[in-house]
Image 1 (spheres, rainbow, N blue to C red):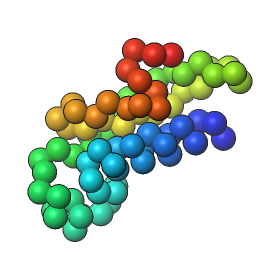
Image 2: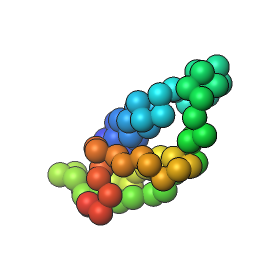
Image 3: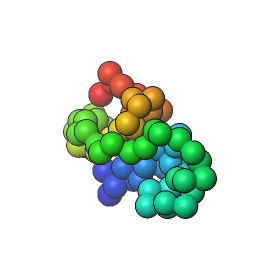
Image 4: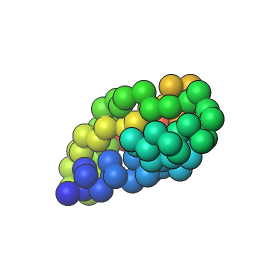
Length: 74
């Protein structure tokens, strides 16, 4: 449950960063950017309920910096 919530939040951050939702080709074309999703990487986050592994999305240009789970944090 916690893992799913964090993952949904990270995907929402990526949507806001890129300016379109995942799978929305018309909005992607309208945004006119070369930057797009480029998979995910796993990260272990320490929580009050123990360690949780989440998938953090990546942007092709490397410009996405998540705020929910900042880089370098646990």
